[in-house]
Image 1 (spheres, rainbow, N blue to C red):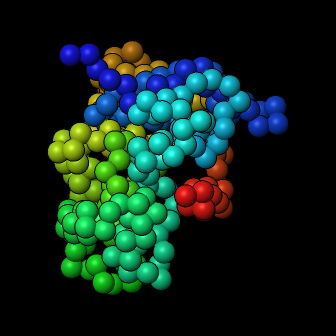
Image 2: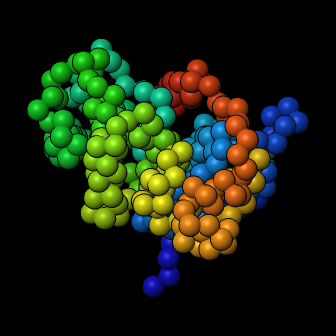
Length: 267
């Protein structure tokens, strides 16, 4: 049986005032795959995700997400994916249940289906007993688990995770990836994630693409990347391919929060 690409990117380019942030990249992600998109700060990861998720128009190139065009079929594309941003995007003054309900209403999930799905997901991430608590009382790990549950509420085919375990302790990181892997297996959801934890990508991803200076420089399994660079770990392979120079941030926290607000106000 032939594989189906849920993401197809062809010759995608994005320029800002003469600066090329994404430079003629092409790649595909198969349906049901766990795909890691890695790169140093400023490499073009966030810009690529913004284009795929309808938040930024490309300068040139073509994209398809779940068969839809992010430029001309935005509503269909947005219904196809869930997303967890690097920076928090929950309303701290609402309860966990209210955050989930609000998301379900935005996505027009029917009320009966919504309530059942919310209970299922909050139990999955061990937050059902805390559903009536204000989010501002939650720890960082609890907030991240709630964001994951919220992003899955509308049964997306594709789940974007932008550094989902940043700053979390190893135990919480392992639990979060356990939830994600279970969903990947049980519901066939495709996972597209970025991370700076190389061991996380090596352990979780079916395939990896590394982008640097706006270009994809290599793609393949972790083992293939290590073989091509003659290294013994993904971290060593990553450094061999991208160097050890410290990079500037690709996007500030303010930029990312503006992206979140734009996404919600367009609904």
